[in-house]
Amino acid sequence: MENATKTDSVDTVSEVKAEPQHDTSKNATKKSSKSWLILSIMGGVALLAGIAMFIVPFVLPEETLPDLSFPIIPSTRPAEGVYSNLTGLPVASEADKTAPTYCIQTPNGTDGARPQAGLTQAGVVFEAIAEAGITRFAAIYQQPSSAVIGPIRSLRIYYLQWDTPFDCTIVHAGGAYDAIQAVRAGGYKDLSENYVYMYRGSYGSRLWNNLFTTGAYLAQFSSDMGYTSSDVKGFTRMTPAESERARIDATVAEKLVITEATSKNTSDMSPRVTEMAMDFGGWATFNVRYNYDSSSNTYLRSYATGAAHEVYDCPGENLGEVNPEDRCTLRQLAPSVVAVMMVEEHLAEYDHYHEDIKAVGSGEAYVFQNGIAIHGRWEKPSVEAQIRFYDESGAEIALAPGQTFVEAVPTYGAVRY
Image 1: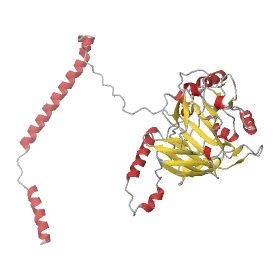
Image 2: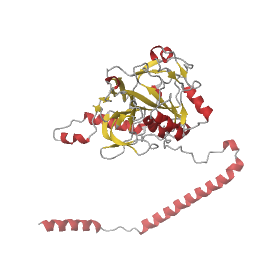
Image 3: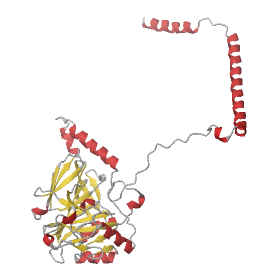
Image 4: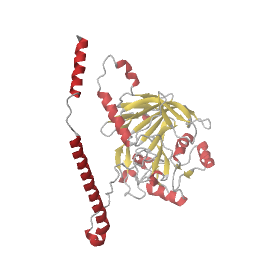
């Protein structure tokens, strides 16, 4: 029965194909005549158009001629962005990428160093112990416009080694013996305590932490010395668009409901983190805290006491040798990225007082950005090489654009989140 059904189907199809055919010879003749007529008309139109294009320019005045040119369609491809090698943020031109940079030694002691001035304009800030558990900053600026920057204090060799890839002018007030020798031997651009390009504010509560400079003074120094550019070897960075996608992905992942069946695999995910602490292992006064602010996608920096780490923001129009307390406003530090390097640290052999940190090498690392924490390693193969960060799988971590704080925490210290 099944086969008969199939055969019947085939026969039916055959019958349809075998229907009586009409006499198509007359139709074919008609179609051929029509095709010839259409082709003739099209050819005539083309001939007349060609003649018109040849004759019209000589007959009609120029202002009445039709526009026979093809329209120029603008490209819809967006222009390539120009991003700072220091911060990863957009800049106006390629020239801005190579503008002179300045690495300024800035204290963080309780002996008059706080609040600092101008730190909000630094693209990268390294923090490490300078002596007796007291931390100090190496703040890297490019084209600073701040009317007050400082205070300025002495240099250490490991700060110099972190500064080197940024090809900056080293701005300091003296320094440890090995650091000064390295600056002289290495041919660095150097600006030590100098009252042409720096000034002393009033002592008051600042005590000896009252040496300042300005964006204008630094620019004048570079001009006077012929330092017209810097070859900045920055961190590996995401573009702003890539960073925003990463932030959104992390936000979406946080909202996913993790069932008991999938919870065992969550250790492979970068955790969402809103609070973290870096303990330098010395006096608690110099430990630091960060709180993630999702509205600005930044990390609000505070002291261990919980008090906000505020610094003076000094607009460029406030020119002149002034105390920041007199003409500037306070603003809380809020970097976009906080990267932690666990470092080997001990007392310097030359005086058994100042710190000595192994800046070249590798070690454990944490990167906090876009609201997540990434655990991995840092590597710096040479003094000239920039630091690179890698996750636990060995893939390099691209840092989000914006101000970046790099915390050099000794191995006897701690990172908590």
